[in-house]
Length: 65
Image (tube, rainbow, N blue to C red; front, side, top):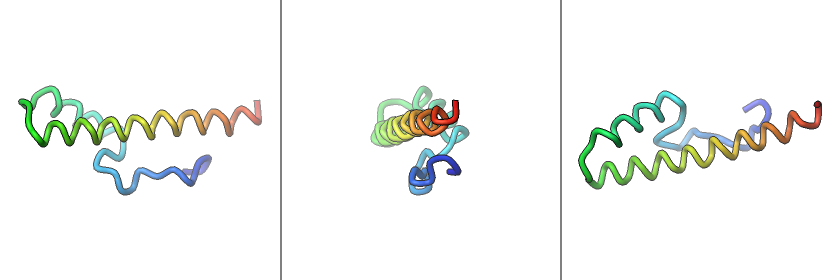
């Protein structure tokens, strides 16, 4: 939040690393279901934002390198 305050995980079901680890375990364990499909999508949304955040952080700190 300090380097890229415009990015937030607040409204997301999977909103941090702990949530992601728990979701990953459930995706592996659960049989095919609507809940599994939804959780998989939530994970993809989280991973997409997390990766984008890392790129934005790199862009910000590269100005100082």
